[in-house]
Amino acid sequence: MKVFIGSPGTVSGLMLRIYQCAFAAASIAVMVSASDFSSYTAFCYLIASMGLQLLWSFGLACLDVYALRRKRDLQNPVLVSLFVVGDWVTAMLSLAAACSSAGVIVLYARDLDFCRVQTRLPCNQFEISIILAFITWVLVAMSSHVMFWILASF
Figure 1 (cartoon, one colour):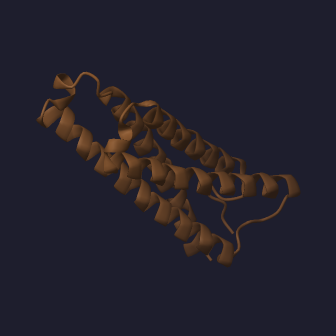
Figure 2 (figure 1 turned 30 degrees about the vertical axis):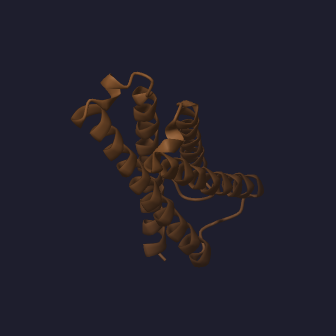
């Protein structure tokens, strides 16, 4: 069976999951540190989505560490099918959350100039959190793409 970069149970797969965790945690941290984020539903959805992504990626990173230490192969059809479904679900949720949050911040910052008028609103922090969420989504999309190709190779 062909081993892809980012496959489960490999060092590259572990690094991909660690980066997913790190960017999701950073997105959450920046958003939570911004005042008044809980007034906007899209930002709360971003926090929930990134929290789910953080848990999923952390769990798979732990599984990768286990596989690397015990020299186990994680590429069986049932396990890879679970990874594919989980990665695709979390990828779609992450993309939806990042896009909805980006839509809110574009409306406030660019269209309505609400960020310029309301100086107490930390629009820059919102934007940084959304950028981190998009980076998280790109990393999840990479791993879900790899998982799909592994499943197709069975």
